Image 1 (cartoon, helix red, strand yellow):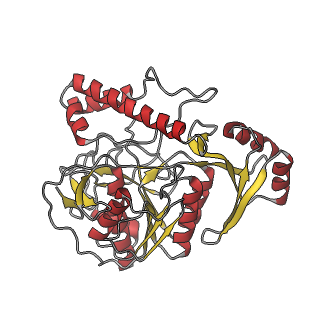
Image 2 (tube, rainbow, N blue to C red):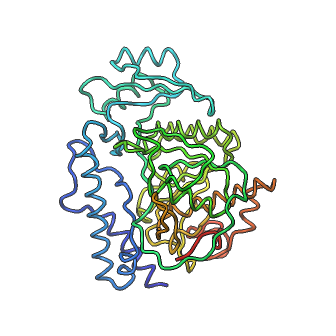
Image 3 (spheres, rainbow, N blue to C red):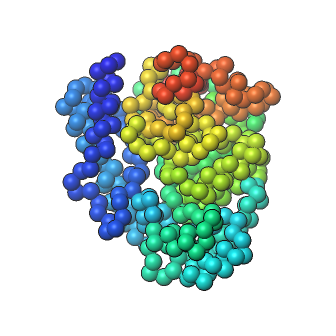
Length: 411
């Protein structure tokens, strides 16, 4: 265990070392790279010896750098970096509940109102501002903060799904009986395939709803764990800037207004004032929000929305109950659940192996929904079910314990 821990620490350290050839953006630091996950062969190599660990860490760093490079270079018209160096939709900022005085100051500074809408399910208004022509997003954020001090301003940050490559299927055991839990559960992700039945589905991105492997896997895991009243918000579709903050907020608004009691979110991004406000508004309506800690490793910045107050932050564990080497972190950790050595449906309706903290989230969401179905205090119910692994009591590796070991289909 000490050797494995030392190797994990070495990987985390290596991932923080800048590499030659990283994407250079004049005047802006490199953003938090969207997660690419760590496939099982890489994990096995990493635990096989120091040389393999160094090679695996370097390759992961290269993949992360390449992905950001592609993201920005292929989508210059729609994506740029915000003031924190994070990918966001180009040329727009979000204002929450702005006063007439704030709007007037913004317009006088050259911003134009691109749209406004009432988030009835969440109880606030949101205005989209087009930044002044020729101005970079980071510069526009600084300008707006100066002319409208104290206003709730946010970029339209991108959020990325937390999964690794699919794996070959070897075998499967039975999962829980589907449809046993009637509590409405919302899913914010991609859309499931046509073979999976959901109560309602709506798109919040260009081309959405569009069947995806990731969304299909999340829905199938929820259904397999007993959730039968599923409402899916697709915030990706085929939009290059899919997963943006505005789409996530609209999805939260729709699901909360539609009566979802639990919302499963298997994606992550930076701390965003508008998303934080939306999550808090949903929680005040009694919604239990469950989110993944991500797959960028322990050296990565904290993942959001998992790190927002009150959100159930979930990490993944393999079939032997070991937490995933690639699991990211949040400002707090609540539970672990199976996130490796399990299978789920892809968009074509075929069972495939999956790995990542993404896939632990729907299992915890299903257990929260089951507790609400029984009329229990969901937190107390989950604590009673959690298997205490690692150091006694709550810890940084498993949180309050491992949930739902028997909920998923294992390879």
